[in-house]
Length: 231
Image (tube, rainbow, N blue to C red):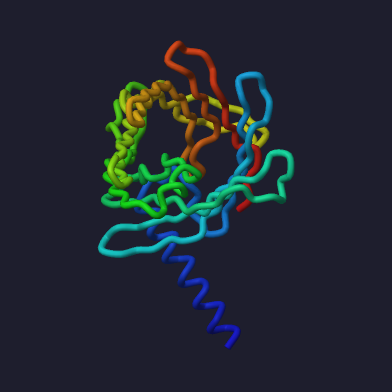
């Protein structure tokens, strides 16, 4: 029985590797892998910590779907969970897709749980090969929220995505050769407009190593860094 069980685990692991090898991934490829992040404001003060853990890899109809459990903890008490949700990624025909629903504010969404919400997305895409100068597709997500007599619309568009460089980045988790990707984020909630400029450094088989967010005047708002990897 133990031999059969071990064989089943080996076959399962081989299947997962086969799925992930068909695609250039910008997330961990193995179940159980954990990424630990720390967020800081412009003054360098820690404002948040969170982890992402690979929990599921599924193959269906020529498409592989990956799910990560994202858990936000209290920066003053790392044992206290503030929020947790699942974010999805997928791969098809060697193209890596990021579900735009990961950009939703989950705390805000809790306030709409008793309302009718229609979500429309255009996922972000990463082709098999990245290189400096490559322009990437736009992504978007829009929400139509039915709130009785008054409806509310929320939209986020990610535009002007471009690979700017291939360079080394060092964080507490180590030194990585990353693709530097710039993008503009345009959000609108009702009559309120917010514009941000983001820069992210990403690497294959892990994902984001560091990111920086700037306001429309170019002033740094926040940074996020990978501080630990558990595989």
